[in-house]
Image (cartoon, rainbow, N blue to C red; front, side, top):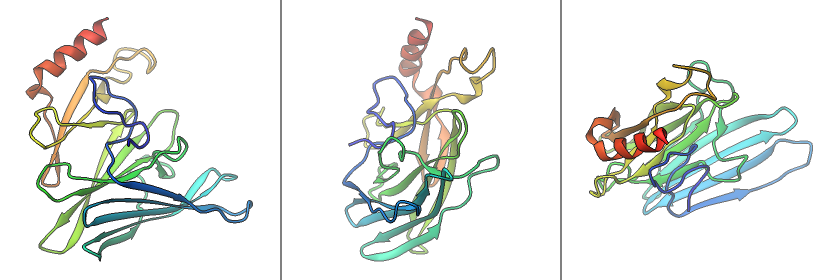
Length: 219
């Protein structure tokens, strides 16, 4: 299954999302006038993530956003969602309006320990998408978050090297408005890696992907 906007990589990057494994989404409604509480669940093996929030349609606002992660039945992370990065408005679950999931569990770096990924949006005409990746730290028994801002584009996971470790394929948002309006801009592929809690840019390591993308952009 694929949550909001995520597609299996086929050379094109579409709006936010990711590969998902064993995810569930539960909607619980209250009185029509009250904000509606929602719960999203995702799990892989012994790791489960529960993302709960309320949505007030009249105010067009999300609130009470809370993420809890359990590992082997032990609560290893539980906290209210932080405010969006600088410049952001109200944090929104990225898949809510498309009725897709925004939280999932997957082993991003192929080390045998799944990460929890929460995909979010902070409002605006087409910006900005961002993700919070939670990595288990054995020394503390807790999860450490990393926030990565994608900007005007989301990303997809793709094992480009076929080695069990996933790359994050997106578009280079630095080209937005660089030579014209946003609508007239074009964005080359950008390939990143998440390893040991860090994100690095690895685009030059994939000349074949660059070539296919450049050819598509030219046409």
